[in-house]
Length: 221
Image (cartoon, rainbow, N blue to C red; front, side, top):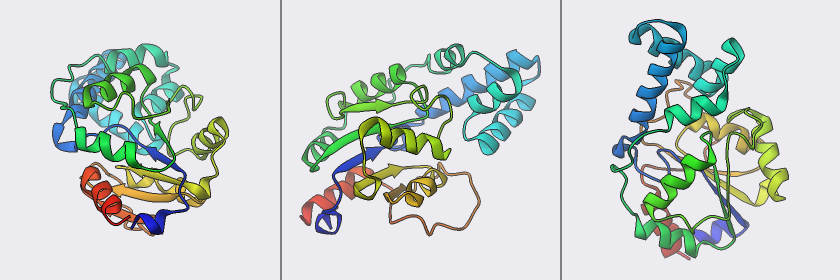
């Protein structure tokens, strides 16, 4: 299959629930802290806070984006709070690191999280040396995926030809803008996606295990 991807010279990966399995459930801890942040900010109970949090996520791409629009919060304070979690559920993934090292071309992380958190996750996974750079939510001027400006900014920052780039992501809706500008798209379908839109025409490849998918395309090289 790598022959079919011979045009790709830039490999772009989402972070959470993509470079580690959703079964690790790391994001549940972040999710709980986001709920607590909303509850404390608005002085409401956790049930109401979680409903508002999820509405922001659905409507704006991230809880942070919604909170900034409606409540003008400090994004640094929010991200520092929600990412203050233990990462002992993550394990080193040597096969994934080996596969990424074998891919021909550049490798980047494209995440709606912030860079300090992303680097901690990558180190825990044994992927700290696997990527050229992390393009985080601050680099997106706090307009996260799936905003079209996030993808344009990524391509401009690293001089990426989107027609020669492949993007791997667990949130299918974040692949749609990538496909619109010419990227090859890979959906890690692991249950993370909450968008009920049945249209997946913008997905080129679909897998529930990134390591196995990379193993498959590299085996066929």
